[in-house]
Image (tube, rainbow over all chains, first blue to last red; front, side, top):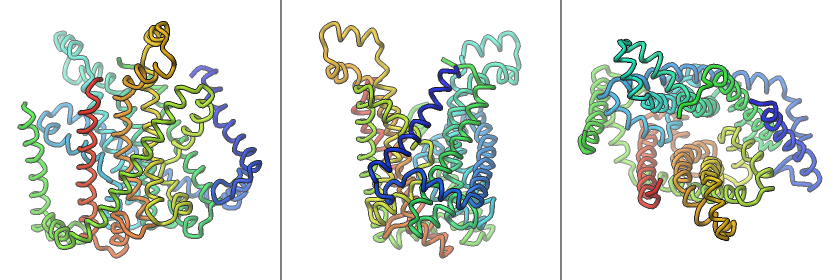
Length: 248
Length: 247
């Protein structure tokens, strides 16, 4: 990113915070709807220990689920691309599964695993897996037929064609799937905690809801947003470092 | 391969999976709470069909209402950002900041603001839908090349005429994309919101059944809501394909 772009991407959130800090008190917006930034920060400081532990807990669940989803999703996507009958019979089901409320399966997963770390990791994995698999297949399909034939005609093995043509073509598409999958993994971890846990952002959200603590809800919204942005930033960083090329 | 044959193959795969599921559970004596058989789930749905359909109807009504409102907000915001320069600096940072937060984190806020009734679910679905629609519509509106815009302008077209005749038709396929993504999200968030607080609805059924470890009811609710949202999604895609045939 250029320096100007970086400046711009930092300036917008800062301006937003400034507007929040000044406009809300000036208009005397009722706290129930939008509390001012000051009280929210104070509220956050009061529970800073629990908040940090929760961010780490939920983040860890989401990251583990996400990493599992990358491994299985990419392998499934490549299998789909290579094995015709598998793709024809299962791929439509994969697409369909993306439109159904998969998160409802979270209840079943919690019945299976109980309130363990495994349960949340599995829900995160399950939600993130499908977009990654689908976008991997999509990426594998973008491989230029002529280029692959050229490689084959010079005697390149299947593995070599895969490594030198198909995978590099597919990676930008896979990265798109990773970004979708990442946000879903975070959703899975939070919702998984609603079915019963003692630490985590989902737990804190539930508690804040029961006592109707609007300030705490805003603290948690901001914390969740920051966690999401941090993870998203890490994925973008990896993309910029390792998958910098574009496929037309 | 013909369309019919490939559809047959998919149906075959689904039927095969159901048969394997039924056999494995029966032969290995898997306890019901771990995995009920498909026939047990089906008979559970059939046995409580009136009640189940009532919950499903409510959930789907909330989803469709939220989807409609959210799409409208997203599309209108995109047009506003396109047409009014200062609006972009005002709207986009807020939209991006809100989109960075997973929608489920807003669920408690929606329940506190709008209560346990339908409106909190409609609001949260609208929130989930509006961002993908906004982003996709905006991308579409910006697609026409400057040369085309200049051509229209040189013939004396106003900025509104350019929007109506050039930008909107160019944006519709992309808008349709946003609608598809948005719909898938809206069912999920409605069910999730119902889990945390509702008088009725599929999400509430799932939540109560989980608390009682009644896994047959959970499976029945998941299966029913999945079929319903698949059906609605297919309907949406069909309508979009018919109305927006250019690309």
